[in-house]
Amino acid sequence: MKTLLVSVSALSLAVLMSASAGAQDSGTITKAVGGYSFEDAAKEAEGTKNFHSADGHLTFAIVTHTAGNGFFDPVYVGATVAGNMIGAKILLLGSESPTDDPAREIEILNQIIQDPTIDGLILTTPQVGAYDDIVKAAEKNGIPVATTNSFDPKIYNRLGLSHTGQDASAAAIAGQALAQCLADNKITKGSIIFPNDTGMGNIEVNNRVTSAYGATVAALKAAGTLDNFKVDAGPESVGIPADANDPVNSIIGLIEQRGDVVGAFAANNVFTPALVKAIAQLKMGGKICSYGFDLGPAQQEGMKSGDLTGALGQQPFLQGFWPVMQLYLQIDRGISAANLDTRAQLVTKDTVGNIGKRFEN
Image (cartoon, rainbow, N blue to C red; front, side, top):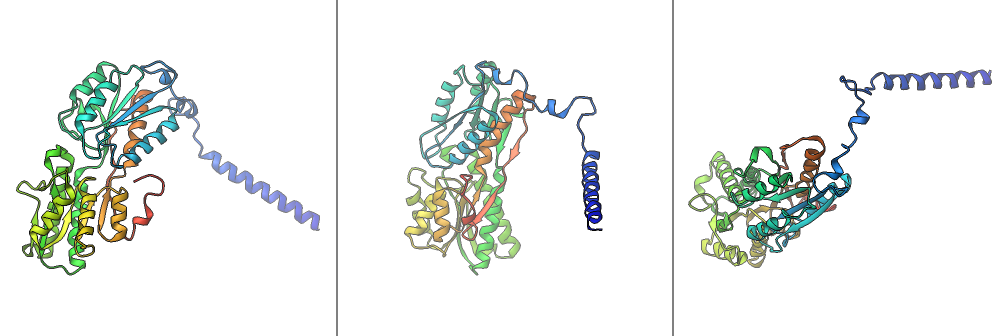
């Protein structure tokens, strides 16, 4: 009887396994409607590795406008990861300056675009109208281009170029958070400042200030408290004039001059670390609802110390990873102009411990 039970159990298991395999097989699709196999279609095109330079491998260059302050480090990491996945060589280039330096970036671009080993070019475009000749030269040389991070809406062949980056309207998240912070802390009056240096020529940063300012005003108005606050983003809503060459003292000066600052927003990796230092020097941590942009070491330390209430990350890893993949897809598959919005990630003291563990911010 025992032998019979074992035999029946083994038979039942075999039937179950067969039924399971059959269920899986019944839904498996091995060929396209057109008759080709997906396995064959997934293979890289025969000529991809010899595209343009014809040296047996792809080489992409990524050039940024400021490699000296750490923001673009995750961008370079993302580009490297993508390059490793597709077997491409990635040249990591950029201005050595810790502040925005479009002139140096353009100098590097003019050099690299003449390199015969380059198969694709990725560039940031903070200065509107400054990159048309670069794109035209690349097109003439048969080199595909992708833009990342900052967005030039008027760049040559804009509709034909892919872009990876965060829309400036995402800054509204910080503007709303600032207003909520004031309400949560029962702060009912005072000045809210938005320092910026429009002389840097970064249209994205200017648009962030405008977006954050508008969101703060709208939130305070909805709460019925707008008239109690002096919300100042300058006469054109792109920021109160501040000095990018001395941002800390500029912000300290603004806070001391106003005398009643209860909120502040900084829109980039120049003024956000400066805002952290200014608040720390004035020993006003926890007394000002302070928000900024990017999630570099200074921002993370500021949130941990309480000198920065929150910061918006723009997921810079993706701003390196996706442009490399986009250029590859353009070369290997003919897919172009597939944009990616990296959106915004609001980080505060409560969540700052969750980021920066894999070089993503």
